[in-house]
Amino acid sequence: MTSPTANDFVTYDFSLIINKYMDKTLGTIQIAISILLILSILLQNRGSGLSETFGGSGNAYQTKRGFDKFLLMITVVLAVLFLGTSFYGFIQS
Image (cartoon, one colour):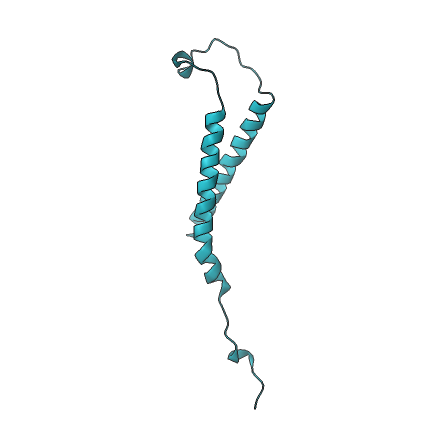
C-alpha cells in the first residue's frame, strides 16, 4: 500500500465559501447600520413647529453639547460605515 499524496486529498476553495456568506452578511450589516442611522437622525431634534422646519428659527447658532454632540458623532460614524459597506459591496460585485 502506498502512502497518500497531496492529490489524494480534496481541496476546498474557501474563497467561494466566504463569498457565498459574505453577500448575506454584508446585506444584514447594511440593514442594521441603516436602521441605526435613521434612528440617530430622527433623535436629533432642532426644535418643533412648522416655521422652524423651513428655517424660521430665530435662535442664533449654538454649539452642541452633551448628548447632542454624542448623537452627532454617532450619526457621522454610522454614515461613514454605511458608505464604506456600500462601496465594499459595489467593489465585490
